[in-house]
Amino acid sequence: MNRKLEWLKGLLRFTALSAGLLMLVSVLHWIPAAVDKEGLKPFATVEQLKGEAGFGRVLIPSYFPEGIKWPPRLVLGQVRPFMAAVIELDSKEVERFLVISESSSPDFEPGNASRFFSLRQSVNIELKGRNVLVETGLCKDASSCSRLSWDEEGLHVRILMHSPSLELIRIAESMLN
Picture 1 (cartoon, rainbow, N blue to C red):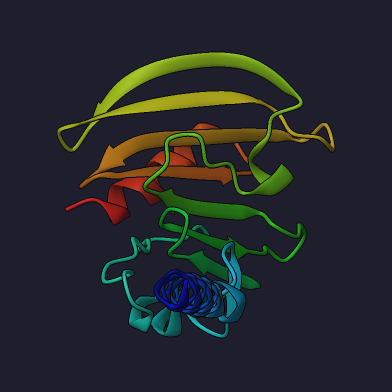
Picture 2: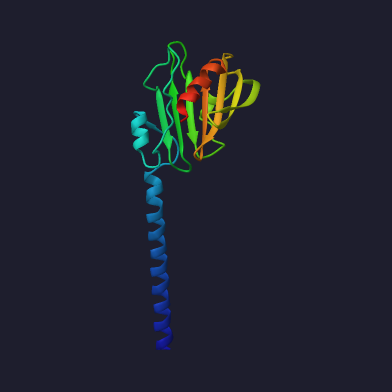
């Protein structure tokens, strides 16, 4: 009888210790998720975004049409659940005049800034050896806007601008090697 009691006490200790270890592992697994929130985070500059782990290269145009303000009004980035970066620039007349986004997810849309209210035309062109989708239409405010999108080294790049597509094509050309 004494042996059975000792065996039950041992089993109870083992179960309690296993449950305690399981709880400890669960808490240790939860801590990084609680500290490092997923999703887009603001950055002060494009250089700060590039310095963040996983952002080595961010495509920035070397050409901007007259009137676009630099530095960007907004720089956002995330590493999890997928890599994404968003850069918004104003013009003298329009907020969010130019929106550049890069993402490892083909479904990523940077908020409402890149959505057309009415798509008028969609055509594929070749630009510096890349297949680029050029879309023109109207944005939410009924102004003329254009969007270019292409794949670059595992990233999906989209540029939206509140103007006809010719200037946007020039901007895209300046981003490509």
